[in-house]
Amino acid sequence: MKLHIPTIPSSEITPKELFYNRRNFMQLAAGATMMSLLPQSVFAGDKLPNVKKADETPTDKLTSFKDITSYNNFYEFGTSKESPAENAGSLKTRPWTISVEGEVKKPKVYDIEELLKLAPLEERIYRLRCVEAWSMVIPWVGYPLAELLKLVEPTSKAKFVEFISLEDHDQMPGQKSATLEWPYREGLRIDEAMHPLTLLTVGLYGEVLPNQNGAPIRLVVPWKYGFKSAKSIVKIRLLENQPTTSWMKAGPAEYGFYSNVNPAVDHPRWTQAKERRIGEFLKRPTLPFNGYEDQVAHLYSGMDLIKNF
Image (cartoon, rainbow, N blue to C red; front, side, top):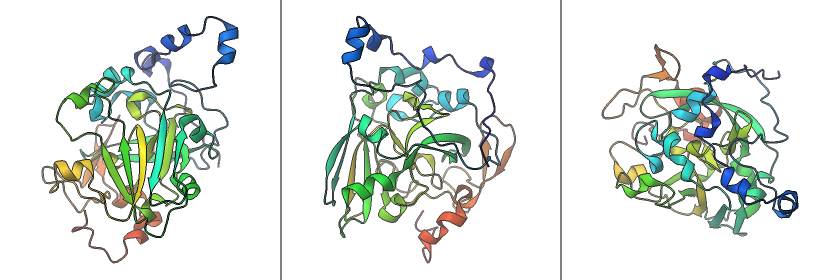
């Protein structure tokens, strides 16, 4: 079934100039001749071409573009939910490269433009559930991370995948504080990383990913709490041993390596049994694995999901 994305009234959409600023780039082009010499790039706010629409209509109402881009966790730009939208304009997403290395036969440094063309882009409507017990329903654009990992040919020693985000204190003012140890690090088991639901994401609502949402490229792992989905990635390392993630280091009693959405395992400071969908008043029950239990529960067969939180 073809997805019908509801039209959002213009009155509900935050003006793009608050989030996107391409004027500096455009000023570099003195005219059409100069523009023709520049490499083709896409920037936040641009439409992504040739995106395959989601096959099914979502059962949950989509979160508005305004809410998705103005209520964020991205501590590199500040700890309040409004800080990323206010501060992320300083992030320069071109040029941008991602190094894929470690236990692979074909390590490589990929340019972002190359990654945009590595596999067909598709829309995936995923729930995003954050550890603070709020959630959204977002039409992400990307392709399975497995498409990239297969190209570098993981060795038999590759058991885990580590994701490292950009560290640049000038572009990311939140990194001037000691909220976390920078750069931000996250990780998955190799089978989690290769799962078809795990998305290497470059956009949302059909547009290039906004800075405050993790531009120019981020991870989306829909059955895990949101902090597992690393943003503004610059390095992917395949490892033999389990990496220590940023939140594990900051609070090992509160943030485990797996971080699967589990209503039966409370955060030490609040319950995870219910969540508040952004844009709604009443809370709703939290679904095991964020509603993706049928697709991913087999990955944890025989595991104690209370001990391995």
